[in-house]
Amino acid sequence: MRQSLLALLAKEPAHGYELKQALEAIFGSAYPSPNIGQIYVTLGRLEKDGYVRSVGVEQSNRPNKKVYYITAAGREALLTWVEEPTEGPRVRDEFFMKLVLAPMTGLSDRMALINRQRRHYLGLIRDLDELAERTDPGNRVALLLIEGAMLHLQADLDWLERCQEELP
Amino acid sequence: MTTAPVVRAVNLVKIYQSGRGLPVPAVRGVDLAVEPGEFVAIMGPSGSGKSTLVHLLGGLDTRTSGEIWLDGKRADTLSESGWAVLRRQKIGFVFQFFNLVSNMTVADNVELPALLGGASPRHARERREYLLGELGLTDRAAAAPAQLSGGEQQRVALARALANQPRLLLADEPTGNLDSRNTRDVLKLLSRVHRQGQTIVLVTHDARVAGLADRVVCLLDGEIVDDGAVTTRRRRPGGTAGDVVELRG
Image (tube, rainbow over all chains, first blue to last red; front, side):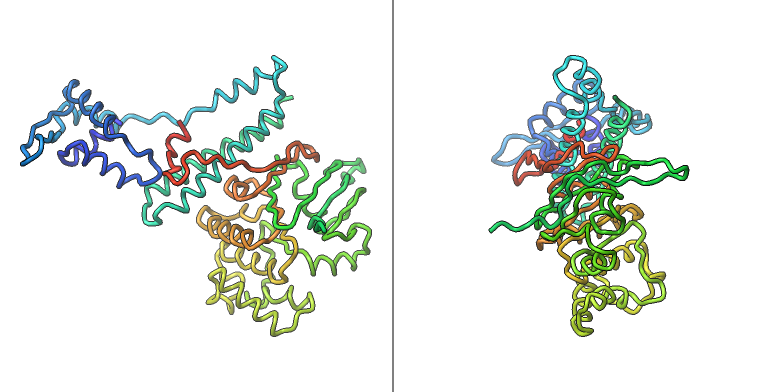
């Protein structure tokens, strides 16, 4: 959230609600709609760290609204974020822990765990499919995000298959 | 009155002979019943017997032992020609490599099974026009298969498989050779014909294909190790089920 707000402010100064709207417009249904409270909390922290500053803009009949803009330090932090390599998706180590450890306890066998997990992934794929159906075909960003999630699930399924083959 | 399963396998076994004459079991005692309108995805590692199973169900390969019932009729005891007749009437096939007849036009490829199945030329033509229209291929009717992209060829193969309005559509990795965009076209079609009541049994590695199915059957070493419904978990009905980021988090 910090970096996305910084990036939007690097484009142009904005107030909190405009930032929320911009995130929704860009990512569409594929991104959890940010909560306005969270946005203000994050802006407050960014301001405390010296990455953004705010100015009050007077409005008639309404309380002043705060417009945020990025500082030089903020730009620096944003650049560092943009240029550093991004962590790949983590291995599903929690499921793997279950898979390795649960059979030792006699609580479950590996086949049952893998089968349950496979159905769960397929259910997720199905949800994503329905989400893609509901997404505006013009929103390439949202659709690519959904496709990315599906490809990750494909890899997870392939890996389950390998576990099923290799683990006794 | 209960309707019979569209296809049913009872203790189905297939054992191949290896080059050195050793028996290689590919399918080892499969019991499976597919009800009308069901969409079953068959998954499992390479060599687990998935393809062999659908080939057996469609009579493209002969079983070693066990029973196969199609639409309430015992099929495995039929003669080869008896099977062929039944297959033409009741089963549509789609493979990974489209297997279109290369020196025939798209239109003729799609009409052929209907004509072989005994439909009148007029009926075959009407069905072909309808299917190509549904698949967005009307303007490709006069083309040769080689002039089409892989995705288009697979859509033609699907049209051909559906030409006879088969009771059962069998597919073996129908998207295995397609890129993401073409896969999406084939998926749309499968999901549409399924909604119209088509019974489908399909072998796939593709999670997106399997996600369309109502039921997943998983094979390992020639045996079914899982058979059950694909569960939908609507997180936020009507909402932005999205939270795609949340899904990964």
